Amino acid sequence: MTDPWFRHLSGKFIVFEGPDGSGKTTQFRRFLRAAEASGLTVCEVREPGGTGAGEKIREVLLDHAHKDMTLTCEMLLYMASRAQLIEQKIIPALTRGELVAADRFLPSTLAYQGTAGGMPVRDILDVARVALRGCKPDLIIVFDVDQETAARRLSPLLDRMEAKGAEFHQRVRQGYLDQIAAEPGRYLKIDASRSEELVWTSLLDALKARIGAA
Ligand code: TMP
Image (cartoon, rainbow, N blue to C red; front, side, top):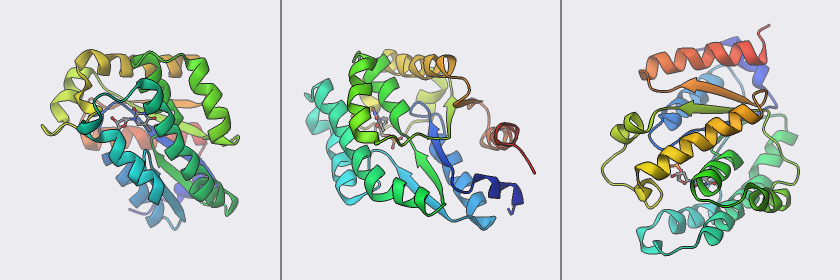
């Protein structure tokens, strides 16, 4: 699909967020294909990961062998992966005027380690100030879905984070909803409980309404 509207996203930093099982990554892939088909140069990144060091950190974070990992260690590892990604990929791509599309960013840490895990937001933001180097997304898209629907969509082979249980994941969802309520201008909430096709159409409509069409 070629949609010339995507050119409005040139030089922007867009983040895809949502609880596990929200369908975020499926929509992220469609978004990348559509943006590239319209001729945009896209820098695609994912968290944790997206760099050599970051992918190693991802393995540690999602491995069941580290069930005893402390919340502080977990938060710092997510932030370490992010710091590497920002310096190595995100800032250079934005400097070149590319569209940067990220599968997760700081809002994940605020929802998972903050609201769900219990770490004070102030502590997360203190570390983020060092890791982010002033790098701020232009828009954060949150794929919102109830916990039961999200759980049904997950593969039975859960990773360490997915295996944290229904109550934890309910709090993750609440964490995103709280962030949206606090800063509605920076977030776009999409109802992700519907079919892939309907979610995609509503994503495009909402994006065009927010970023503006030619
Ligand atoms: P993914 O499954 O979307 O690739 O994300 C990996 C897992 O890591 C997912 O369960 C969400 C979790 N996560 C955090 O807990 N904190 C973070 O800061 C990030 C980026 C991800």
